[in-house]
Length: 252
Image (cartoon, rainbow, N blue to C red; front, top):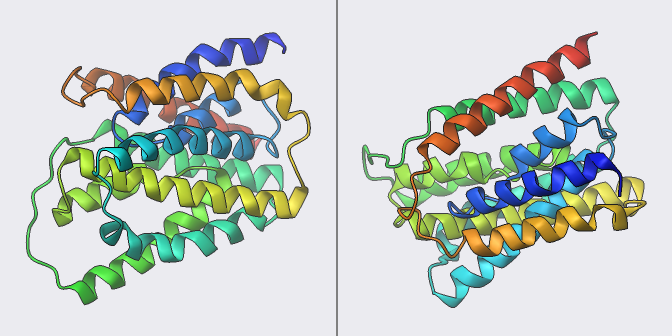
């Protein structure tokens, strides 16, 4: 493995550790790091989706074991996210278009982290028809973006679940993990249908092992065990910087 991947290994471990505490896979930061280190645009989403899968699979096992996963709350979003994530992964993109979409997605994710609030107030009660309508639309949108660039979508879904009042922090983390899992799996399937299996995947095994270990540790830590506010702000600044750099690369 070359020096680039060796440098990425501890960064991927820390990313998985921090994100898994909130039920996320870390896809936005994996994408930012892979793009920053100059990996090919055809490889970046596949590696990010694989790492997402590894982290949230471990988290799902833990959340299922502790009975904190409720499928009924995430089902309206997942039903449309799965086919749209596959379609997004299947669509071929030129490097320029991929970088533009990736830069925009990372910019939104960075702003989301920068202004992350730990709690959300529910403004009003919503009927199940409204919930399903919102869920099907939002799920399709997040699933499509997930497949295109390799971002799981949980970082955008969790505040909506908080707003709807669908459980405590750990239960919403469990729902986000499930959403990221199905998106990442469908998106990866779409990429494989388009380009085949990832050539040289053995070179990335240290990254996969790093996120597995970080994810296993992170999902077992209480979100109140450590203050994540500072880490979130630093991560947001890094992602926003990479987003601007990617936009510049796409436009020159």
